[in-house]
Amino acid sequence: MNISRIAITPGEPAGIGPDITLQIAQQGWDAQLIVIADKSLMLSRAEQLGLSIELIEFDPTSAPEKHQPGKLFIQHTPMEKAAVAGQLDDKNGHYVVDTLTLASQGNMDDIFDAVVTGPVNKGIINQAGVPFSGHTEFFANHSNTSDVVMLLATEGLQVALVTTHLPLQYVAMAITPERLHKVTSILHSELQLKLGLNNPRILVCGLNPHAGESGHLGREEIEVIEPTLDILRKEGMDLVGPLPADTLFQPKYLEDADAVLAMYHDQGLPVLKYKGFGNAVNITLGLPYIRTSVDHGTALDLAGTGEADTGSMKVAITHAIKMAKEKLLRQA
Image (cartoon, rainbow, N blue to C red; front, top):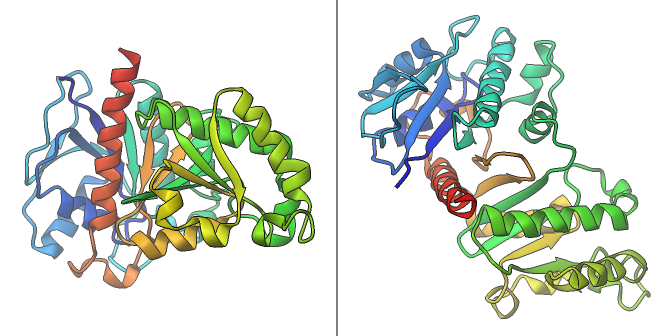
């Protein structure tokens, strides 16, 4: 069987990204892991954590090999200034973006089969003079992808979003028939292609309380959501809803569903993070390659202490490997 190559970008060098990358490298993986980072950063952080690591220069022309505990392939990417755990420095803002660029290009060139991203600090990257609104937007722009969908997953629950980081006052205006059709179509096709679900069942939240209560609490369900779902059902999609968001997150609905489509960020993600924070993964759907990410921030106070929890990174890598294998099977 083909061995997948998984690129890892540790993210902010002063945060816990390098720590959790080194920690997960202490166990075996059914894939080749390649960290895109500064070699001196990884070695110095390993020493600080008391971890033994052998860094091997990555050669894309060599045959992939499974990850061995205590070893890690590296694509060296130099920092401008040595990083100190817990201390942000805008001089390394460009370095973080360089690692993301190499990961994205490597995936588009079929050198890698997926990328797993560690946490970044958006503010320090912008302070370095690099316009940066987030991983998702960066990868979409670099790969010339017009539309992507955020999916967060944990054991027993997957939640995708129609809108992401929007003020609430703009959410209703953003939920148009065109956007709902596009997001649902991407979610459906990616659940098939990358997650191996032949006929995924998707539960769709209403926008308003009680899904609008037949128009008494809002008409978006009647005028936008229901008509769009009817069109999508005629295209062969198994969609249930719109359902009241305050009642659909219970076993009698979720046990027969593959994903939930929420209308906005804080409608679906609080439930998912309550259920699985620290063991959840952020997946970007719609990209021409597989991208997963941890569900937490840089945790500067834990950097270099050895106390960072690796749970989300393990889940992100596990999902990336699984999705990479599924994609290869589908394309075979």
